[in-house]
Image (cartoon, rainbow, N blue to C red; front, side, top):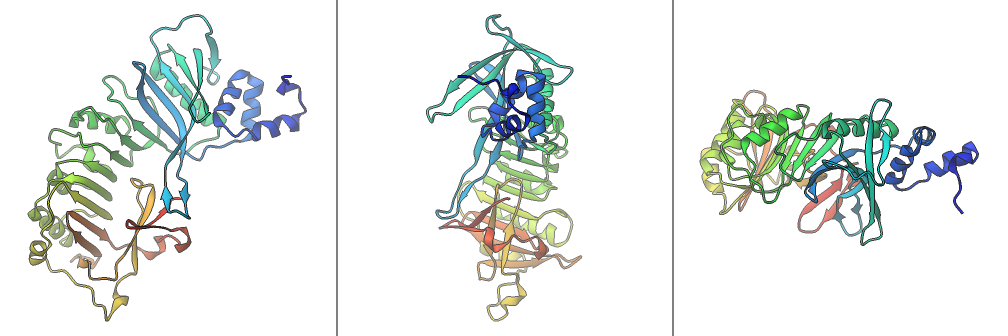
Length: 383
């Protein structure tokens, strides 16, 4: 027999709400009435982070809202990213009056909504809100509402899973952006539109090899602090990048460009903020001997290993794991910046190049956090 939650004693009501394991349930409960919203707010259930996914669903634009966790199996050394939904809104042009509810998202915004629920193959129950309200308005109201009931004030991550011909999602405080549009071409104008819409961006990940067109030198793309990209245009990326961390896949980069890059760093002519750079050539290997002929490297001295740090930990927003590299071996070479003596460690391996600028050891992660993954190095999940 159903029990009226609001007729239970106060402590029992709070305990029931606090014990809800699904954040979708918490969100839906908050929409039932002002009293249930008050219960949810008082329970102080918090989100560890907030992510948004913008995609097509049945021909309509849909915005999914949830959060991510990055569990790591320490026994097997397996890492994965898990998405936990909170709600989603499907933007329709019209709604059938049947089964339409008016929900209040905050004090000043109401939306006529149809709720649709279904069960996934794994037994998980999901829902979405279908709305005909103006998309920009309900997106803003929904973000503010979720921030309110879950006491969230952090930054947000945006996944763009579709190419937006019109407006991008109306989301504030977007720090991290990931673009994954398999069958669409990404032009420089679209990248500029994204980065100017979200001016507080910190990182950008483009997970498919579909950038076409020349990026102008003043493109905001080169000002992003942390970039991971699949692109043929390695030369432009190398010569114009002003950020801290970059990973490039499938690049076409002659050895002369690699030499020029290292020389500019040594002379302090460019790359003043650079911390880590890794790139993977689309085909062929790097002629390391040619690079070494043009630049004076300091090789590893096995009789004086203490001159080098034992390891280098790569910690960047573009990789949800920390990768550890051990430097005390002949595979790594060292260069020094002329102006301040800053050191960097370089490694060439087939079509791969790493360039890591030495950092304060205080920022190194604890040994106990690490997970050894066979044949791929040593990793940890960010906590």
